Length: 257
Ligand SMILES: Nc1ncnc2c1ncn2[C@@H]1O[C@H](COP(=O)(O)OP(=O)(O)OP(=O)(O)O)[C@@H](O)[C@H]1O
Image (cartoon, rainbow, N blue to C red; front, top):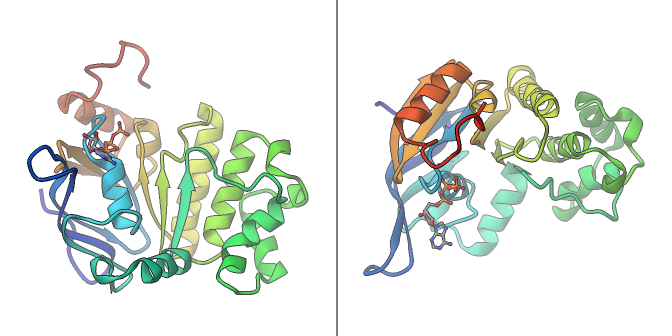
């Protein structure tokens, strides 16, 4: 396969290797991955359990450091940055969406959305907050706390919180993993909309072929290596590729969409 190349890449991993533990009994989570994500595209990373998906996402987002290789995000080489510089880069240029939403329970919706800007010492303009909340369909829930919202609504707050900083990339680690099918589709549609309407770059890890079919491209990992990719994927094609990779071997029949 030929990973995408070129200056349009907003994230680029070059020969990224990640070994957990020491040289003798280490686990090779990534064995030299080269991969680019173009600006304004939606990429899903898939692969069997333990294939290195989360490690790949974490290295790309500066949450984990590669053992060797290079990661360039929005023109910045991450591997040379110290912890403080990495923290600032994550705060200013990256949005995160997690399976478990990660909202602060004591803050209401508006305050949760404003949080990344506050942490950066920037003023969150009310009009900007209103705009992102309208975009995710939560204009009527501004003063609710997370505990008063459904799972789908909480994830929409997390998307609004990720969008408010206008990050170079939004990374999602199983962003629909805790949602029912219909709610997951709404959340995926919102991410798709952010890509289409404001040119947002989105990269998610998912186990779900239906979720992956919303992406422009699916990148498959197996044993810490790129094992192929699909463009304009259908859920059926993704599912077949996962079967070829032996992804469902340990899953009881009928539990995969
Ligand atoms: N902190 C760690 N210490 C040691 N080994 C780790 C650590 N994190 C991940 N690994 C190992 O690295 C490999 C890749 O893990 P990773 O979590 O990236 O896979 P994954 O594809 O995201 O898996 P899953 O789909 O099950 O979440 C696995 O063998 C895992 O056990």
